[in-house]
Length: 345
Image (cartoon, rainbow, N blue to C red; front, side, top):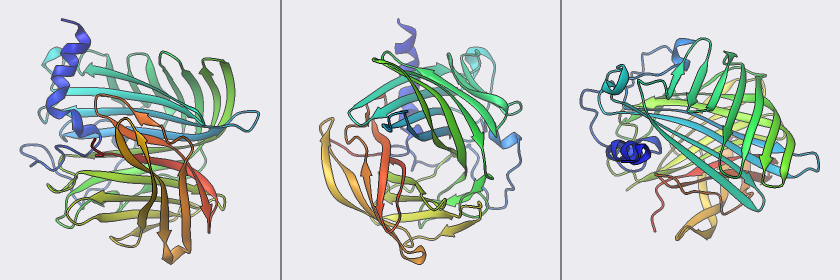
């Protein structure tokens, strides 16, 4: 049997863990639960947490080429566990999945990798930092200075990342509540990377510069049983301020977010402070997906329209979802990224 088929069969019982829309409301069992008293420790917490069911290292970037063309980049490594322990060789219950994508105004390129932990094919090391799956890698001497590489059938990229601001902790010092019932995750970001490097597309190499945002999150039951998906926004305004906000869709929607000032100071946003309402939908992959939004944060005077650079940025992966760069207009100008999960046929 083809090894990719074997890995996919191993992945299917927990395939939705990486994107949070089918199965993430199940009970934690023997897996660890996030604790609001936990103080995140670095560099250790840049690494993996095998006692938790799910985890990801999730980087998105907004870039431009020499002619001003806008591009988006995604690099994601997901870890999902069948049991709350690590292990060596094929005995390990740790499963890994990688997604890479490049978005242009008129094209969207996607690739996926699947791996079993314990055999060296995929993993994360905290210090010096390295996250990899096959020949895709995010690595460097520290979390502030990284090189990012990935490739697919029609694209590749090799870019450098340099942090210009501090880590950002969401919720209560990295304890991020996801529902009125109290489901939560540990969640922090590095939203202050400068980026430069090279995209390789079917028509050749393109030097790019821009900014990147890396999310780190782990949990064992981050969603309530009724929640079916989320709409997640990371917005970088021309002022230097930033906004992370998400809507978790369920019987009653739940929202949360973080206001990030240009100097890195943060303000946690409680349920209801941040709102996002679809303005228009686009038919992609047999689904009607909202690709234009009105986002509001009245306490900061934010009332903006968030528009997809390419409405066809569908991730046709084992767990399908929409992910792509966006532009921001209205009370604030800027760019960002939008992820939408749980949209059915």
